Amino acid sequence: MRIAIIGLPQSGKTTLFDAITGRRDEPGAYAAPGSLHVGVVPVLDGRVDRLAAILQPRKHTYAALEFEDIGGLFTGDRPSPEAVAAMRQADCFVKVVRAFEREDLPHLRGSIDPRRDLEEIGGELFVTDLDIIERRTEALRVSVRHPTPKQEEEKAELALLERCRAQLDSAGALDRLTLSDDERKALRGYTFLTQKPAVVVLNIGEGQIGDEVAQASGLCSTPAVALCADMEKELLALEPEERKPFMDALGLAELRAPRVVEAALQALGLISFFTSNEKELRAWLLPRGATAVEGAGKVHTDLARGFIRSEVVAADDLLALGSLKEVKAHGKLRLEGKDYVVQDGDLLQIRFSV
Image (cartoon, one colour):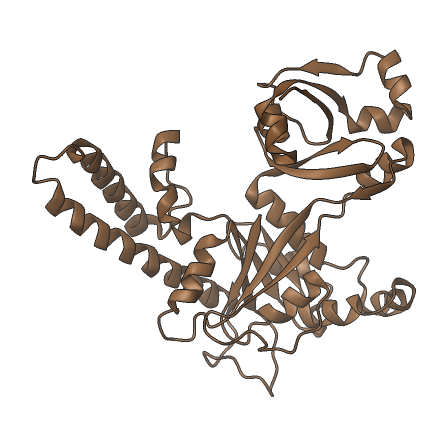
């Protein structure tokens, strides 16, 4: 999964990227239009370590998300084609809005107003989607006048895009448009920006630390996290034992950057499942509601192609009982078919034949 960090210039998005990924980049490092930098972030799940202690594989591996810092956005000019292409390839956005004051770094718009900045980001995404809809509907209105083998298909596409246009006009975004599975598939190729799930990060100053929950609440209807990206980046550079006194002085019980990862998982509707053998215990991410055969496909296409059944153990049961032997003795191991809906924390042993 690819998560794009976007925001107005000088909002601190590159600093946030570093705080999440552990990099040490200079502010503005990716400010050139369309510039893109990528960092892979492990999804730290305590169940992985605890399961590994029981199952004793040679190694254990966390699931991971790919975060991207996209430069050259929302400068007042239309986004470059490269920047738009990068946003289209993302599965989720982290929208960074500035709440910190710095005299040596004045806000691009002249004042600090997170809600205004968030609306500006949404407005730019709106315009980009609207442009695509208008150009395509104009072409379709001409095309459907002439009998062709695709006429009925194009009429349906035109009607769907007109619904999208009406939704944009009324709501400003497409993320809450009710769609059937077939309609969702028909729109997939457009990769509309306002249809993508999003997380909002309110980038606060050091003096604002301690009131993050109140500051983030009410900002928007999507998941929101308030943090001081600059401070998080500096703290992350320290060893844990060196970090604690500074965090205590700031009143921070924990780093807040991992909450951005958690919020992205929530926005994407992802769950974790596990596979294990003597070589490796591994966590995987899967959309909520996906089936066992879809989970098998995440591991390897051969497992999905030759899927027979899956042995399923809930991680909570294994952690509570302490061994697979006890899990089996208590009747907690189940055999499930390809249509089984995988649950968060399932440990799957996939049986297949190719």
